Image 1: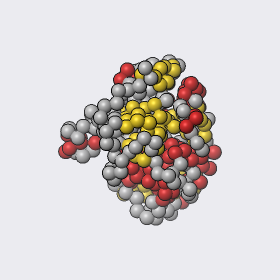
Image 2: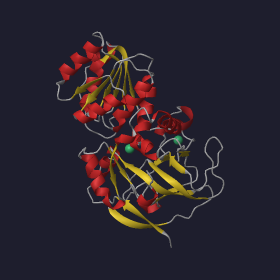
Image 3: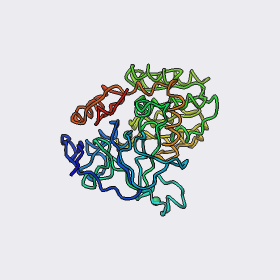
Image 4: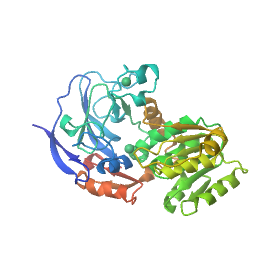
Length: 369
Ligand SMILES: [Zn+2]
Ligand SMILES: [Zn+2]
């Protein structure tokens, strides 16, 4: 029996274990990928801390790039181009969106579909190779694969990783107009890609706020026109943002920090009538007090929460990194590479913020650079 190694997270706080997993029986429409890269992101740290309700044991790794090793039946991308053995692809980690519930059909907000399952998060390892921290990943029938075009290095795509799709979704939701000012709160992988996409969208003043300093410098390379450190007190940051925007505050704020306090600051930094998009509060980090009169009603602002992503974000993220990967340093966000057996160290690197983006390379022999 063919088996593949996988790093399995058995429960909160437990060290990951390497397990031999049986190769899946590929049904028509299914495929098997040999994993080139799978990313390690903040969500994986939250999973390990037991902060998301998931069916342990799981194989983490939601956004990955792999080579198609086997494909059953006719598989094609959305252009109708066949997906064949040897193709390098990534895939939308969200699967089984039902297209049959209120959110899918009436509200048309499929990221809130209750049936959706996510590779590396809400599939159990008992169901098979359904996470990226493994030598192979089982593409169930219907999983949406996106080809990595020749001009796009897989490292550039995985450098942006799941942050790309979240960032793209959040920037879309701000409905940014050319020349508008933007503040981005948080300079982790999501914040960096938000800065990159907002800059490509023609933002005017583009202010990144966060820590540490090396990430602020990186945000400048992504396109930030100004940066503010969290070492500066919140009132002082507000004063500086106002100074950069003729006293008004920014047209749009995107929160991507994970700190509840940042949401409160977002409401202060936005100008009267501006927009705030919150995409950093992926786990319960507690509550904050806001002032509905001064911060919401009187300011006449719009506040939106942004959860999950859809195929269109994924598709455009691959196209955008292919087109602009030489202008925006996504590739350099990959600051640490780990073998499958070092998944624990990879998690620690992300938790301790020693790496902006850590990736796992389960098949180092297949990775050509
Ligand atoms: Zn649904
Ligand atoms: Zn992620």
